[in-house]
Length: 195
Image 1 (spheres, rainbow, N blue to C red):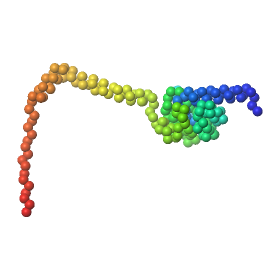
Image 2 (image 1 turned 180 degrees about the horizontal axis):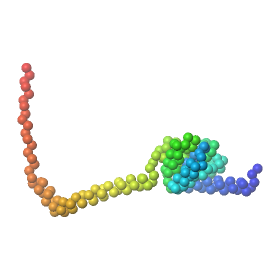
Image 3 (image 1 turned 90 degrees about the vertical axis):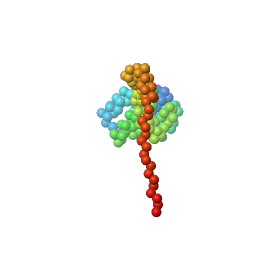
């Protein structure tokens, strides 16, 4: 039977993990079996740089934390080696990094994930992993906002290049007064009579 201090440590770990699950917007549970230290270090560094918390955890402790956090649907995959990656702000980052990593490492597998407190299926995880990063999405939005402004700026510059508003108005008037070129008439030929 474990000592009282060990039980208290485990309760503290479960409480901390449960709070982490509740406060995160997304989490990905993986099997990290068979990866070497060098690859694990690179993975952890990339996750850390993207504000994703990654922790190797015992299945029993994660199972209890899932009960407290209302994520019971995660429990069926809790076997073998388990690690969890959570993010408090980014929805797609953990899934993108871990799914890309799993493509290059045969033994490393994504087991399940949750999004806003609900467990999601593998198709959703894969779709989530294909979303661009927040910075790329922001750049796309800014580009969409800038396009009309840039077009307006080019139009204003074209007016200035032509000599101002008066010159453009005079050019428009001269174009209206000029007669349109006459269309050449094409002689119509009669169809030969049928015999």
